[in-house]
Image (cartoon, rainbow over all chains, first blue to last red; front, side, top):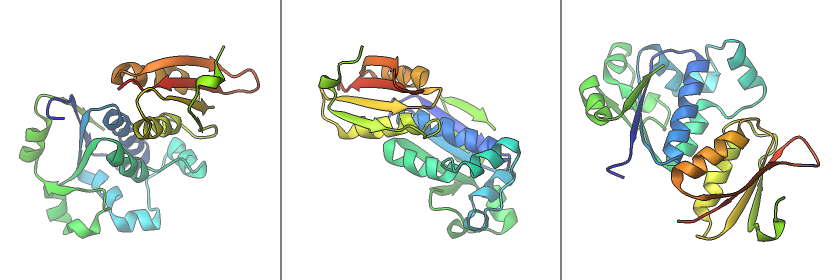
Length: 132
Length: 82
């Protein structure tokens, strides 16, 4: 898959709608044969903590609330499923992890690694980058 | 008109929201053998446009894509060609 088209998604916002949309687009891209990398940074990373998910402590707007109410597969389930269907990786921003004092094990198992922007740019090079 | 006789497997994804039906279809196609025809039933309004686009992108063959006569859903069949 070395020559597969690449899509990189930068998740910055903690808004459930943005994370859900990103997870949805990334999942479909991976399932369609693209190499997908998520770079999760700033307040978006808090939504990838096991603690946040177990407490369902999400930042919900109108659509986000409806997604929950109608039991639409949540973003972490979509990402987990997509990992089985294609090439999809999730990276946590090392700056945020460091300043917040979090550890790899505090994050959901779908998070593959903790990297900085330089490593992320290396992965993203030559592909499309979307920021949400 | 769909020729149901040639369908090897039907995935009933009615009631599942976007991209559920597409994802169910992709999973099933991956597990199928080359030459098999998979049909998906979907009530998601995007599927009739989204599934043919995925089929084209990954290079399978769309057999039919039609609104069911007995309800508000779509029947879409895909042949795995590689």
